[in-house]
Image 1 (tube, rainbow, N blue to C red):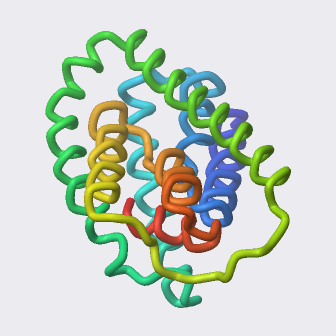
Image 2 (image 1 turned 180 degrees about the vertical axis):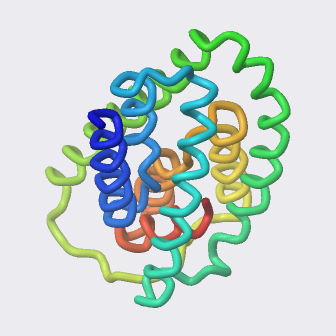
Amino acid sequence: MGELAVLIAGGLTAGMLGGLLGIGGGIILMPILRFAIGLPAPQAAGICIIAVFFTTLGGSYRHYRLGHIEVRSVVPVLLPGLVACAGCSLLFPLLAQRSGWLDLGIGLVFLLISARMIVESLLDLLRRARETPQHVRVEGGLPQKLSIGAVSGVLPGLLGIGTGGILVPAFSFLLKTPIKTAMAASLVCF
């Protein structure tokens, strides 16, 4: 019964934070599945990616209905992400045989994303002298969007984790997209 309570609480937390922050919830679910429940890394990755799919589906629909995203502006991110994910998912069985490497890869991704977001958020708070107008389009050149899409597609394909931890900071910091639009675009892309 204790594991069930942890799974329910973890799922609710991941769903709420995923929908709220546009991250899908994998960054919450993966540690719960691996360390609180004790699932092997490949099994945790598989469960996580399925759960995140449903979180992002609901969240992206809601952001779209609220007018937070112009979907056409993220199509150049979607397509290479899909290709990279499909390609890397073919490598997943090899990586799954070495769960220590899988854990290391996931941990490093989470660590780098967290460090980058903390630093960028602090710098943004210090720089914010004027408000920028809100827009629902993800601006940026085609090469930038294709690159972001390709990099973000590697994570679900190779590691079984969602892309929100890459896409939200990439849209927000690299493409200077307002955070609400960045979160919506992240969910749509996943």
